[in-house]
Amino acid sequence: MVHLSTPFISVIIPVFNDTKRLKICLEALKNQTYPQSFYEVLVVDNASDSKENIAEVVAEFTQASYAYESLPGSYAARNTGISLAKGEVIAFTDADCVPSPDWLEKGVKHLLQVPNCGLVAGKIKIFFKDKERVTPIELYESMTAFPQKQLLEQRHYGATANLFTFRSVLEQVGFFDAHLKSNGDLDWGQRVFVHGYKQVYADDTCVNHPARHSWEELYKRTIRLAGGAYDLQNRKEHSLMKRNLKFFINLAINLVPPLIFILNTFLDSRLQGVEQKLKVCMVMFFVRYVSAWEFLRLKAGATSARE
Image (tube, rainbow, N blue to C red; front, top):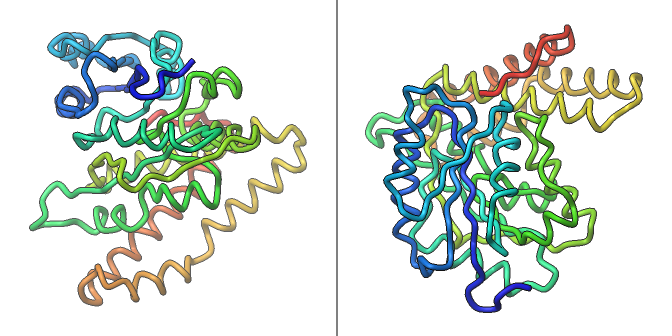
């Protein structure tokens, strides 16, 4: 039974080799407006390198607990956190995120005020490494990364960088698919929708997320997302013919020039000058063709990447 005013919250954070940003995240969670006796933070180390000393960082924060999950993938780590959680409410964020001071307070408020609420997806605000020297990759990320409201309205899910739900909902629809390295939030959110729960977007429930700023970072994210989409498609579709058809459709989508994106880029007032707009378009082409190559690589028998 959920305590109507201040339910106990378990915040779950998967982490893989990201000690520095994890510490910033935990500091932000220590300074929440929500009563400290009504929440815990569970950090699940997803087989980070020993030199990262994740457990030592977690030990610096009295409300945080350390857990370990060896199966590669953030969804496997989140499932471990869920299994250890004490809360009636489960909140998800990532080690590289910085929650706003009222993040827990606002997230719970929205979760409680909507009858039959299955999930609350909060705003994910992108920030730059250096505002004075923003890279084309960062500009691209600011335009495309984590459009939570759009994801919820069009695809019925929210990114786990900023997500709230009830333990009872997880027990009803199931945990995340532990074998997915990406797109597990899509799979889970759509299960919540199919079960008839309400899904809420909360613009005032905010976490800050760094934009990828280098080609290497963007490449890693792109192949991870492509791999997650490929794996999810194969797990959902048992017919070989239909799997192959969807594969070729996805491949074609990535190879066809994104004309609508190009048009929107040139009309976007946030971008200054033709040169900046052309660079952002180049980033989109990079993402599309890397995704297409990753689909081909996986089709040939390769394994999807974890990062």
